[in-house]
Image 1 (cartoon, helix red, strand yellow):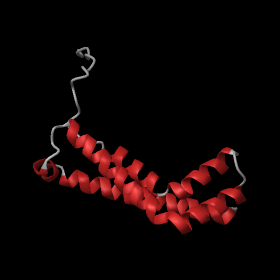
Image 2: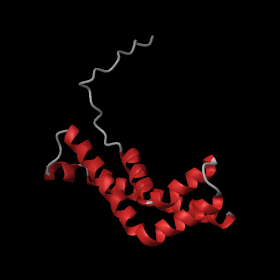
Image 3: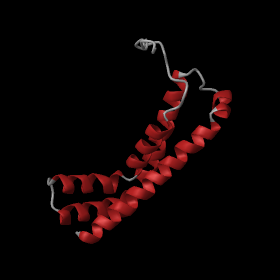
Length: 125
């Protein structure tokens, strides 16, 4: 027989860090200069040529700002996640160092995948 599951109380917090959510969010923000115009073109809001022009201008002039914003978003989300678990000190960072490395790896992989996708879509424009 299976036991009925009880709904979790709001006080119950997961003991795991949301590594995938944080990494993917940071990667998307890091390449928002190209992803934003691409999404607009795929939705039909702007033409492919306009999206390509916007993405090229944004990437050429502000790529490092977007990358730094992606890192800042990742750092902020990690801080919030550690703070919710009362692990915001150095001991908490040491405890979660493997997962924090995973966050960075997932963020970089997301950035690289989106860069490849948007570059490939740019060749079709």
